[in-house]
Image: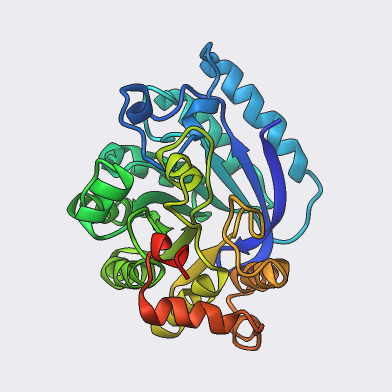
Length: 323
């Protein structure tokens, strides 16, 4: 079953989130052969499409996990594509799902994902009206505010201007904006990736309520995997993530800054030296859940010296192998 619960930040408070992946046909960009270079999620979509009624029943089954749960709860709906894509989730299906959520008292926050070109004012406005005063966020995969990086290193198929347009529509309709940013697209050194992420946060901040820093991990069958297997790409250092999170929260204290270091410490995930990875990943998650910088400010390990040298020198992955 592709639904689960975990501790998370819920509308600015520490709580629990229910993650539900609806088994739709997946991202339309993937179906036309234009998938993002790092993403394999649509490949896991069912080969035989589920009926819309079956999707609704599946969602109701997932909601049973929060029955009797106390404290703030967020429901986050994924589709390996876009919740606002009528080809994946029909308008009537969206309405039924949100009507159920409107009647679920312990749900305080609802988050859905969409590509920016699929955002429509009428669609968002209708969903906002269905759920009343519950906190509603639409998450947009900006990945980077640099259009060249988005094109060459990600194959995103969107521009920063399209993200701005979508964000304005979301806010006008009465919802909030979560912005996904990818840390360390291919062809960037560690220091270049840090600069790209900070600049993207700075440029997107006027249009964003919550930033979600998605740290690159190596997914099977992707362009990133092929480069990684050749030794031409290294997943990010966790110290780089700590650096960006501290900078972002200090620079934009009013924003919610989230990051979940998926696969931290594994060979395919973000990592430091191998000895401190679990510790650093834990404090990153604690910061995300609480937004308290104390978790990031006190952590240290001897491998920070190596990371600082790499970042200071701006070394690329192929140069590191020569050292």
